[in-house]
Image (cartoon, rainbow, N blue to C red; front, side):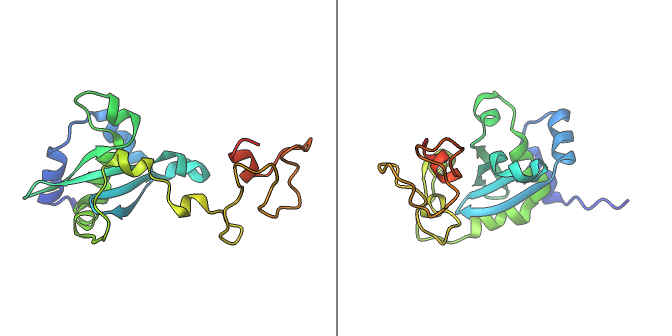
Length: 170
């Protein structure tokens, strides 16, 4: 088997602190990466299949002059584990590698760069829209279902409400 690890890959990994267990998990799991904004990459653990969006975190990227490295992650493991980097940062460094990291640095945006915590707190219009043609699914202050699903038993029906009604607590 051919070793395709570059000097840049090794330098990125040297900047991180992680154990053998984290390295194994990163190697076993499937990963997806998307550049969300300047210095922010969404790292998704695709091993969870249809639940993968629940296992998706923003990772902040830091340009340290001679090397670009994952610097912070929005997951609990990264925030609460002292001295060790989370698997999302390790996956970005090892699987995504210098190409994805450099893309996060090079991306242009008219909006200022946000930290991982600031970005996770922002609700975008896309987050609010549903697949029902692009309209907002349910008005939280209204007592009626407005998204147009004839099968909805909410808000006061005896069956289960549709997902948009369920999502706002009806």
